[in-house]
Image 1 (cartoon, rainbow, N blue to C red):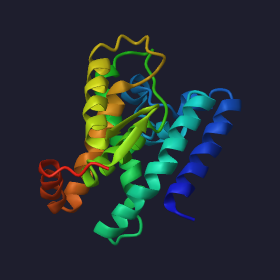
Image 2: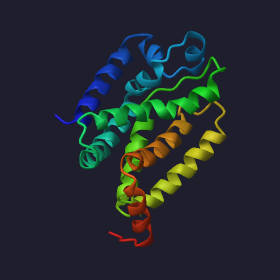
Image 3: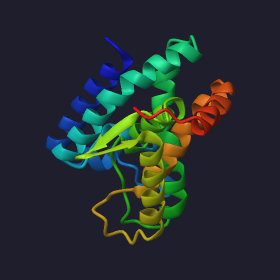
Length: 206
């Protein structure tokens, strides 16, 4: 079984248990105030394994199913360490949670859950490798690089105007997950940056 499928199964099991076990979701969520006051640093990772509801869980895991296996194969080519992809995914939860923590560490009413940061990371790792690959957004076909630019712009805008009434959606986590997903493969294989630039300058539309 691939690492992607193992992560999906683990996330679904933990999320489903949290749906029915009162208090578990809150105990595992990214709760900046509790991290600051009670030093519950495990929340930086565990928040990615619980979700707000069925739709939240389905959307994240369905998206991860399609992009995760592609990114897993990319990492198999650029790094031979067997656990590199699980490490990449885990950091895709932790690193985007750090700016969220610093922004809301004094707010006792803020918490966030979900694997959106890691899923965004996977999408943008594919943007790095195949920027002109097509993606369908409802009935609109566009290259991944265009989708990436729009995604980053919307996430940055929504994070900047976040007033705490957005239904618990941590748009800043989406943004920093995307940035992390783009940068991390370049750290492992710096030549990917020049390859990306070359592809941008010589677009191939499909």
